[in-house]
Length: 225
Image 1 (cartoon, rainbow, N blue to C red):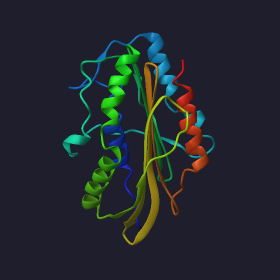
Image 2 (cartoon, rainbow, N blue to C red; image 1 turned 180 degrees about the vertical axis):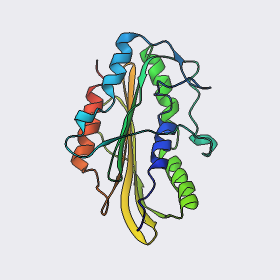
Image 3 (cartoon, rainbow, N blue to C red; image 1 turned 45 degrees about the vertical axis):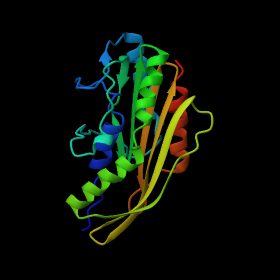
Image 4 (cartoon, rainbow, N blue to C red; image 1 turned 90 degrees about the vertical axis):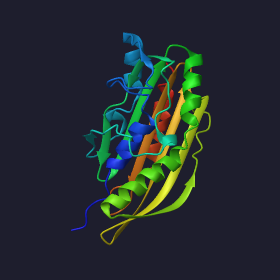
């Protein structure tokens, strides 16, 4: 029986791309953590909730934050000169081969948010994903082809935004699966939210484009307290 494409790399990559939006133990380069109750509550509301996903067999997924195998330009940027006052990144949700991940962070001031956003936005996020995927492919015996690479229009969802989409064709033990990975990094005022979606088609169960758009719209609205 053919096994499904590994979801591990998607979860690892999300932790790399949104590493600053974490309530986990502090590591070198993280913002200084001076959380207060109001901003922490705001950060937790911003991320995607189970109720946002609608019906379906959505399951909570844990992820690793190990970025040790990625190129230097894909490591978390240094934000240690900034102060976060709230952050949240869990849980992630999976359903039959597709994943929805989100993370949020609130900074002490709008100026700090813009500084952090600029540093995160300089990272070649799509290229980092492809690098991670190719590393996973070599370990697991997958074959991968990048079908297309581009950005996603978000209109006026947020004053600050960076998006990307990578369309993929994966072959695992003779089974070919098409899918895509997309990310949305949005910022407004003192807050930023990141949404990452990986969606694979049949024989797995893809995430409809309408649901993906709904999720990014919901996340953008929650940037305003």
